[in-house]
Image (cartoon, rainbow, N blue to C red):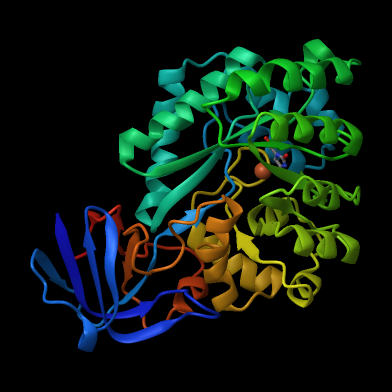
Length: 399
Ligand code: DI6
Ligand code: FE
């Protein structure tokens, strides 16, 4: 199947900056871009041709850090937090990650898929064409695999690329209370081998309330041994140099990073590890420590932005809203924010076939009704009314 989009302003995101091509044309055959450039050099269109009316086209957006698959509800716990309850009080009252774990364990794979689909559809409607989804609310071998299978099957349901990540080391399940090393052994000896073929990467929560750097190191080593990529929740609430640890394992990304320092930035730069910033969690937690964006810039660490969609700290399904928050809260430029959900987000997932508009890459495109690319980060959410092409197929096209 051949399709051509004409009369478009392209923000290809190739090279440094937006990579703008005025009066641009994109052609695709069998889901792959065969031409992207000015009209003057475009081949004669043979298949279906779409006039974009001068609108902007960007690469499909990539949400490179989500916990989209989960059951249960935490809004009551949030109301308690607003009224002043501490994290420990909430945990004692049965809240926190363990409450989502209980609900997720009690939910079938098919029901997890049904619950996740509306969240996925909200993201897709605003231009997401690739999404990463983590496990981490099962915390048994069977329940983690159930979450990964549910995440993988969203792939077929919506013809979207789902990258899956095993986050078995997310929290200590209650049955392992006081025995964290036994749980880490379950993750390294059973979960990681069992997840081979179902997970693209392995992640862990390296934090005072999660797993120590030493325990995290065991998880990442087992992942590398199994041939899986690694990512890490690091420096979200405290400085443990998890980001440096992740870099020492050649991690694709270290995520959150509010408490990262220059040594972390240098280690990440040397390893090619992407800094994934999660402004939704920063906002929702009323965090005041800003991630060291200037250090990442100074050391040329690529910066990605994601929703962190999860029920405890970032209950959002809008990636454009995260662009706005990244600019307002973290002082990214609109261009940096857009690179953070396209070219750098692809890199955070180790995907080399997307993230920019170029010949030979996947035809994942979004056609926006905007005056300038900055408008994508300017709006505080709202209906983006965009046209979306996933793998060369038109998934939606606005009137
Ligand atoms: N960091 C977070 O912000 C989430 N997980 C993590 O490792 C919180 C997940 C939750 O509260 O359910
Ligand atoms: Fe997360």
